[in-house]
Image 1 (cartoon, rainbow, N blue to C red):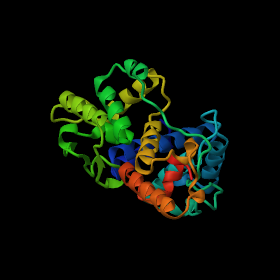
Image 2 (tube, helix red, strand yellow; image 1 turned 135 degrees about the vertical axis):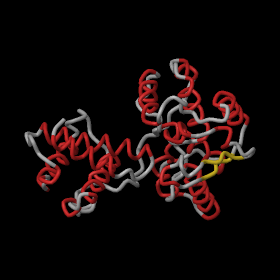
Image 3 (cartoon, rainbow, N blue to C red; image 1 turned 180 degrees about the horizontal axis):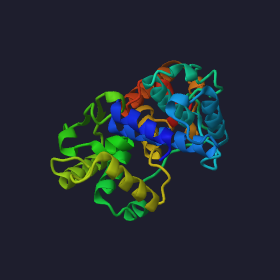
Image 4 (tube, one colour; image 1 turned 30 degrees about the horizontal axis):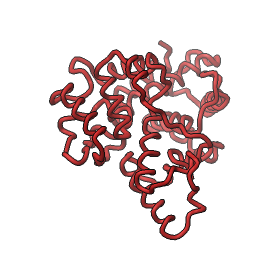
Length: 293
């Protein structure tokens, strides 16, 4: 372990801000930062000696996508910078990254992709999943548009409120509880199957921590031939838009918002607000990413 890795480990141990999922992702980012600093030739560097030039070197690497061998999205860059800013704030060096993301030349997130990122959870995919906890989490994620961490942490029995699924603040991003309507027989079947499997517990095995089970999730995702499962949320959003408006989402060839007039424009606005709330987003503009402009 390099001196910088050791220093970062100590900061992470002393400060456990955010959910376990947030802590896990933050640790991955800052330890990756330490490894890349080492690989760039800054050997023996301690956290107290980190300077702006070191941050700029790593940011340049991330921009080109060299560590991963592929381009890195603006959203990923923003998440990584947020983790670095968190560390620097904890050690009194926040001045090293005062610039806003925009000043650093990182585009805003609220873009509309040209192609849908929706993913369908087929029976062929599910047959490749060998862990029952992950199997039921995948199905819950697809049926209710849950985030990965929510689909793992959820206690299906507790969450079932008859006509809606209730999510505790301790399961959700940002600690915001929310409710998702149960609208069709498929959702009911998925929820009942998860309840029968988990009994009165969560979809994380009792013998495992969240972090340990996350490794299982990632292995099962690869085994099923998936890169990530976030596309299940995109598919949920697109289904809900069609249910609420009677029209396909613009990203699937439906009418763009700018071409809608009067009552149809207001219907589109209300649908976006509703779907954003069900997905756990505070801004309806993020729906551009899921269903298009």
